[in-house]
Length: 479
Image (cartoon, helix red, strand yellow):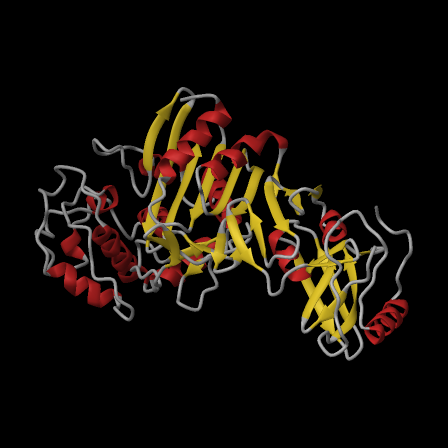
């Protein structure tokens, strides 16, 4: 039961002054039972906090306050104000909050809060003030993926909260959300039909003790190859390259380079091996020198052999014919024209969600993911990748003729140029997955049904192709 009395900042300050002088903190009776916490003036360094939620003032059943640098607020009221559905379990003294498909739980008097299966540590245990459970506000805000801004003065803490406005789980997408949760997916997911978002949501941790939000940047790993292929096709359209050009025309010293064509590089049929040295500071020229030392694994054009080295060579060729660095070319000719403001070449300072690897059953932050131009160097967001999807559909990247070549399978593995291809009952389904130190990514475009699925996962070794296919089949009702 919520008290009807409104506490102004002046009343709150007077109240706390009196309570601290008395040596006890008392509060109006509420519905949350439990121990009444006592605090002496010497042990509680407090001041009142003014909190605004979504531009609305709130009448608090107990006045929020700051204690030793941590702002406490009534859990139930704050969660409800942030649009959560709140339930109280009297027997276990546990609050459960439903928010955008997430189940958030907290047991009174503890310093942890769980979001689905993810455990977050609070800076201090929650406090039961005469029946009102007070929780560290920033931790609750983080758990509900809201934003919090504060201004600290000598007498007050002024806080502005805004409920989660970037997560989207429409009614028709609830089953997708449930599937991803049950599958243990961690990262960012987006599902759209004809460009309209049905689900946009973050899962798991973006770094230690911080949840993923769906508007964050992520490494995209080998989804990068679709951009490399498109850039090459732009130069084919410009007459600067031909798909039948021999590799030796642009790069000297590659084993049987006079037999390998650009078509073979794009379709992974060159016979080149895949692996290359991944260490910070290695330049594109350094990797090129390494590739010159390698022998082919198969006859040029004979069979599909996935090759990162082939796409590194494509990036180098792009630089030679345009005079622009790989990332700069994409920025100028793809990202900026399409309004992809949160996409580019990743560096160690790029603020992306952290990758995690499984170490003896514990998800542990991974080392920095090192790649090379053409293969996996890019970062992006699910929203920018949806812009990419729609731009390809609307002919804003390459011509229909070039796109048809990119989406034509050239081997038994049904690989085109930077995309894998499958058939549905309504048309083509094109997709690509990616993996790299702590990341598992994927993009799938069901062209016949207009469904786009983007998974930017930050747990190593997740099977994103299976996940995307399962979602696609459920959304479209087709195989």
